[in-house]
Amino acid sequence: MISFVWAEDKNHIIGSNGHLPWKLPNDMKRFKDVTTGHPIVMGRKTFESFPNGPLPNRLNIVISRNPDYQVPDSVVLLTDKNQLSQYVKAYEEVMVIGGEGIFKLFADDVDRLYLTKIDYEFTGDTKMVELDYNKFKLTEKKEGVMDDKNIYPYTFETYDRI
Ligand SMILES: NC(=O)c1ccc[n+]([C@@H]2O[C@H](COP(=O)([O-])OP(=O)(O)OC[C@H]3O[C@@H](n4cnc5c(N)ncnc54)[C@H](OP(=O)(O)O)[C@@H]3O)[C@@H](O)[C@H]2O)c1
Image (cartoon, rainbow, N blue to C red; front, side):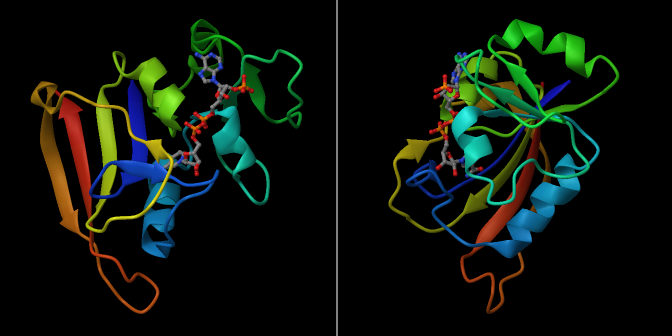
């Protein structure tokens, strides 16, 4: 099963200048909880946005058109999405974590959506792809807790393909 994991603002913005437009530690924690133990599939730019290299306790899979793109030994490099199945056979749920081009690439395959909706408008240069929510049903919704480190209103939502 393929799942998408992402956070977006009111206007579906997901990125700005190669980074997240916001700081929301509670969403980072949710991301960690949802993805740990599962393979994470990402575009080359998202991989390069990680300050400390590959994320631990998850098979990191990076997609690039450049077959010579250098990744650490623990990381799988794909140049074509059809190469994915051979690396994820042992896993029930594969987490596609963006960015835009990679969500687009898997939009017809995705079964589950883990979405963090941030109720705020940010400036950014990267948007979430359009998804047909008529094809999904909301299976979980949880209001995010706000505090001095999590200053924007947000909601965690999970959708499953009907
Ligand atoms: N809010 C969120 O949840 C979230 C999630 C993820 C990312 N982001 C943000 O989004 C931004 C990065 O996203 P992005 O959309 O700019 O980049 P990206 O999707 O992470 O990476 C784009 C790269 O992926 C490779 N690629 C894309 N489509 C491909 C295909 N069909 N076949 C082979 N390779 C392909 C290419 O790499 P090469 O150029 O090497 O060929 C392309 O340049 C950052 O700001 C990041 O912080 C936000």
